[in-house]
Length: 395
Length: 103
Image 1 (cartoon, rainbow over the protein chains, first blue to last red):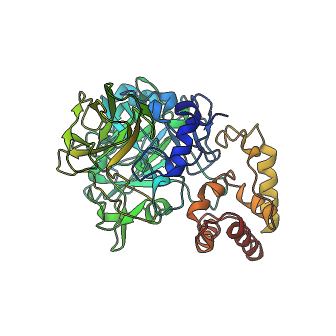
Image 2 (spheres, helix red, strand yellow; image 1 turned 90 degrees about the vertical axis):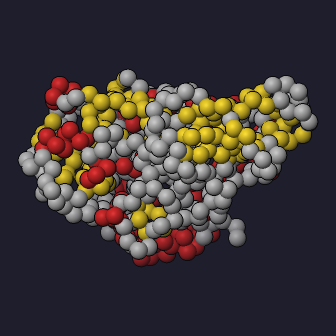
Image 3 (cartoon, rainbow over the protein chains, first blue to last red; image 1 turned 120 degrees about the vertical axis):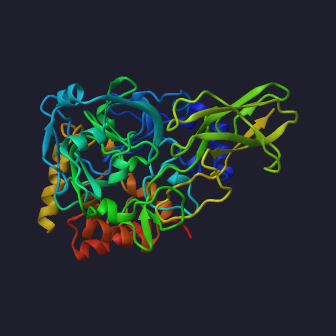
């Protein structure tokens, strides 16, 4: 059992993080990050054994494509069967479907046009552990996210093969994982029919050109680029085309934000005057090159780098400030991997003075949205996309 | 009710390492134990039916008595946790005493 910070930053880092960690920095409330291993995964930050919730450490968020064995793991329910890919079938039907289908993996591979998208998968609750005041739930830091190349078939093509009636309102989704107790609601989710018919929404069979790992939804999962991970149903087993809103704990009670509080697509059929489902990812960034309190040498060139991403509008620019957020300059953007992917940025610095140096970073989307200075509090701890900052110790 | 819970927790314990994979890589969670105090046993036996115990200390900084009450209510009413009234009172007292934020 290893503590991540001891590996990355030494005990000095631990002390600094506990002393004063402003919001928008790397470590959730200075809490210990214990690494644990799931079968087939490299050591990840263990937030919970069962249901398994494991977070990608900062060092594994540096690569343009997050390795499959480093990708975060998030489950609500503890019974997670190993799905046999040969006997697996995807049931497609519902009251607004023309007819029912039962598809094998071979059917999907051979009878539908292949499709690929590079996209960030970000858990709705990413950074919940950074919230002030604290809110209940899995206390994620920054690593309930990753970027991957997802390949499979378009959900649209499968839905259209079954036939989508004019009255179709939502697409209902179900996976193979289930609860310990029969009384516990299964993890059932839905998507607005228009988002399900978007050409970028996929049924993925592969991740970074390899079969989906068990813990990331083998043998098939939904990929909804630009929307938070809660819609990316793992171990997909059933898809229903329905004319009415899904009545599910996971739609009606969980994964909701105050109505009108955040920008992004509306999920009208699930909205009420008080709350509405979380939908799209907000424009955001993360510094991945250094941990808070890292030491750098005075007068030496150092590059602070990280990632910026949004809902698929694409990143227009990333700016940084080293004068207490008084003035902002443009960071250098890396190549674009796709509009739903994250984009690397880098900030070349040459610290002139010894002491603490705050580097603040904010991303701007092509839709004109920018990371805010202040957190919009919401009881479930979603959408922490405030300006990121990192304090370097110049010695 | 109580009997169901006892049977279920026994089943979970019996699953042990053999069931760990299906239960979500749970090997090692036996090392997580709650603080000593009145109510620890009933809290442990009911909570571990569905999840490992570190969810409790991990959430403590976000919790006070009212928040634990709400969580208990959610577990019993929405998730069907087999916890009767008397047990719920004991568990609430235990969690509020041992796993609440200092405010």
